[in-house]
Length: 196
Image (tube, rainbow, N blue to C red):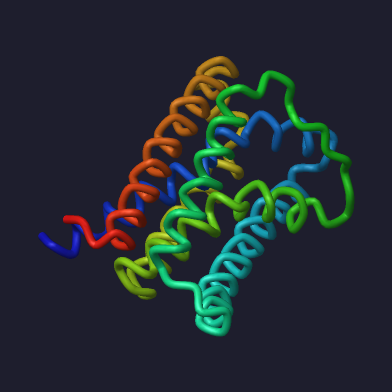
């Protein structure tokens, strides 16, 4: 039961940070002129890229922190502030980002920064500090598996949820991300100040 609880505590923040449903309208607009076989390749490539970027940052991030003498609570506050800014700008964003199509569409921009962006990378580091690497990598893999299925079935998901439904869902995810950000800032300050 405790393992399931830990999985949920790592899975949910990553699900909110990755926000796979939120990128679907942009993904469809990027691949609408691409043949079906190539779309499948792009979906697979983007998820593999996000996993590699995420795990690489997860391990190198802590190494860099130890070199610079940065503690987890410092990163909790800095990461929390960054997540708060990202989530607020996402909530207030009206115009969609304009992205150019390239041969490496699955790597950039879909793999990173859309799937493995600053919010995901910050969340990974903080979760690993609290729960350890294995459970965080498992939760990342599970989230990216869901993202892959959503990208593969993007048109169906949009048909079911509708464009407005997906945009509303993305705003709710951004709101949840801002709540997680405030919680991280509070936890970081509590650790630094030694308050319980």
